[in-house]
Length: 376
Ligand code: AHR
Image (tube, rainbow, N blue to C red; front, side, top):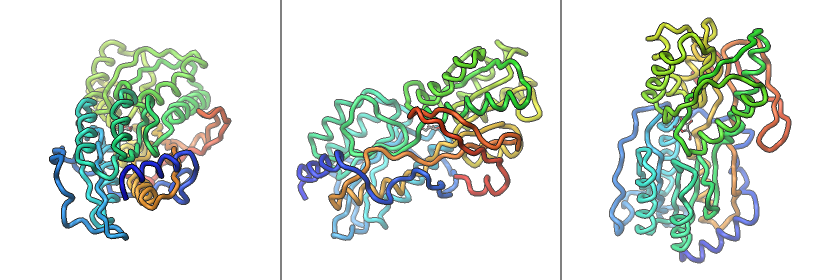
């Protein structure tokens, strides 16, 4: 089928609705490949490179070529995301996947997408490092008739993609705020002096978590002492926390880290500075992601609460590609299901007004060994 014809079908599909069984909302996240070594960066193949011959053909005999421009390898979450996409978009499933690790470099990510367009791949998958700067390159993909699927983080300055599947980051931040409010009340903590370590500036994960949590900071009148980026890395979290421990010695009782790897670094820095933290310490630790190592620290009472961000988007990606290839309609947006994890059994649930303006009551899952075992 000619790309332009396919693009027309896709455009028509975008204005309709549901791909049955494609959505993840409400489904428990499947335990998938455990976090592994960071994937090695791969060069984008030459523009005229043919699909590798050992890819199994799809049902109609075609090998589907897909280019995936991944953010990088900054966190355990990212490793799980890469594993999930590579497992689903596999030779066994008739896909020849060109994987590019963009090493958290937005210019390299745009270049990777342009290389995919030059290669005339059948589909492009993007996990956008930052949420803006996409309009021109997505127009180029659209002009070339190549459907683009966005996963995890959002693109906010173009709608020239066929479908997005990922997390409601603002709800994650709102849930963290609602939990902290309820937890402080339950523990009789009157004053909250907060240090924040944010993720990569300009990423939708950072923007959403910050926006959600700051709604509570503002409405509750909490004291936000400082907010600096740790770039979603362990090293970044550690460096920011080392400097916080010096500047705010004895003045803070909450650290909120926007991912688990930052929390690991922040905890190392607090240990080195002699600051007590976690359930039995002076400083409440809040994190996001809920990867295996993060949940182990919740079980060990070092992290008080961990708000899941689900990285297992590979199967949804495969279903989207198969549906688009079959000319079916797909959803423009699919939200992953994401539970909230805590150390202590003192609150059953939290109630908050979510990003769609709806009041929701959601359970808090007390982590046990089985929870850690089932994590990604
Ligand atoms: O975009 C998802 C975020 O990016 C995850 O929270 C973080 O771990 C990753 O690096």
